[in-house]
Amino acid sequence: MIVCTEKDKEFEKYKDKVKNRKVIFNIKEIFEDWWNKFLESFPNLNIRDVVFSNVTRMLKCKTWDLGYTVFKCPECGDEKVVPHTCKSRMCPSCGNKYNKQRSDSIFSKLFKCKHRHVVFTIPEDLRVYFRQNRKRLDYLFQASSITINSWFKDKYKKKDLIPAFISILHTFGRSLVFNPHIHIILMDGGISNKCKEFVKINFFSYPSFRKRFMKVLLDLLEQDIGKNEFRKIKNNLYFKYPDGFYVYAPPSKFKSYIDLIKYVCRYVARPVMAESRIIDYDGTFVTFWYQRHEDDLIIIEKLHAFEFISRIIIHIPEPNFKQIRYYGAYHNSTIILIDIVKFLSKEKSNFFKSLTNNWRSLSLLSFSIDPIVCSLCNIPMLYYYSSFT
Image (cartoon, rainbow, N blue to C red; front, side, top):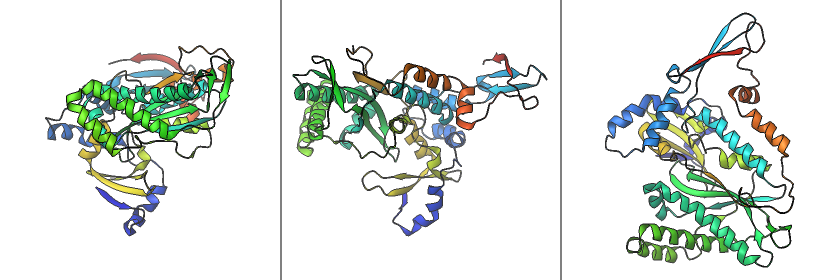
């Protein structure tokens, strides 16, 4: 239920809460209060196994149920017990580590040249097919990559240009509804197989992208669903969207490429909402805000906990589903015959990876706190033993 927009008088009482980006209410608390009641109230709801697995682990995060590790001070013998984390895709805390690792990994691969942010979207008419069968989300990757590769092939056939791009899947809109779309970090240029050189590109034809993307995606869906069931829907979509599906490059609001990468990766392994957007939870209803795409208005929405939970869990990906994929010159199988400088040297890349590889380094990096320093002796404790359940 939409309570108000920032143009309404009622927005005044939420204004300060929207500006205050501190986490006051957390998603785990809402699930602790309502998850079991949700399951009891909707016994016939078809909930995927991966949802049960991730929610169960998230609820046990940093509790004794997942085991613990003991550190001991070599001087005074004082011990510190650290509960294990869940590493669930539902956990905001554990997801932050994974997302940072993915962001650093992408940044280490980027060539040192200009890139642009491109978004491939689908109309609301098609969303149900991807929600019914999650394997079809692969078609979004296929259709967008075929679109870019074919455009390069047609436009730069003589030079035989290889594009370089990274695709990231989001399944959500800002209001948490199911809205799958592809974010692409696309290099402004290509690598010529014939000339053995980098070729800069200043113009991409988005109208051409739109029509190509629509055709390829609809053909893939028709092959999967069948002509008898899908052909009429396909023809109606061609009539309804004569310019193709919406493909656009939003104006850059990022100061650097690492900011863009963090933006597109921020919900790859965590709930699809920042907890700082929850401005009220009264034990039954969750109130949160988001900025609407079409007009940039801030919207205040209030949902019963059941509805909030249902909107969150539909975005948990299937096991082993890759939400980040590399194409063209960024794919491991591509042989680059010319040297292209990357933003990060191999040494710097390895250094950044070392910072996110363990819990202690991340704590130091994020909070400037060493979690295993003895409070009495002020020296690092040593690993003593671990207990697993």
